Length: 180
View: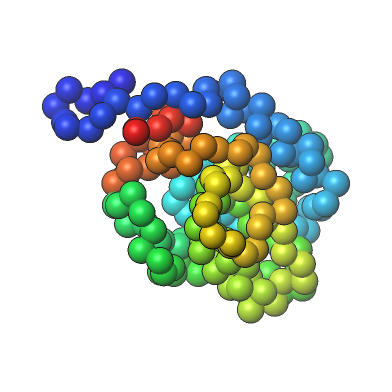
C-alpha cells in the first residue's frame, strides 16, 4: 500500500471496509428516530464528506431523506496536530433558520471543529442541533460539546482513510488506518 517513490510509511488497517459499513448502518438506525425530511445534514469538510455520503444514503434506507449542506472548516492544515484554532473556509450555503440540523464529522478529537460548527449553525438560527461523528478519539482534557452520536471509539493514534488524511493523502482508502 505504500508509495515506493515517497518516504511515507504504509498505513496499517484498524477498521476494515466492512467494519466501516457496519458502523455507518448502526449509526443510521440510531439517528433515524431523531430526524425527519426537513432536517439539514451539515457535513464538515473535507474529511467528513465520505462519512456524510454513506450516512445520508443509510438514512435514506431508513426512509429519512435529509436536506444537505456543508461547512468547510480547517484546524490541522497538513500537520498531525491541531493548530488550536478553527478557520472557516466556506460558510453554509442555505438557510437553517428554524430547522433541525445534524452536523456530521469524521473524527472527534480536540472538539474544536464540532464546537465551532455548533456555534455557527446556532447563530444561523437552527431550532435544534444534533451532532454525529464517525470516530471519537480519547482526549486528555475535557472538551465540549460531546457528540450526540458516535459510531466508533478510536484509539489515540493518527488515523487516515475514509476521508481522514495526512497532508491531503490517504483520504480515499476504504478502511480506517494508522500511520504510526
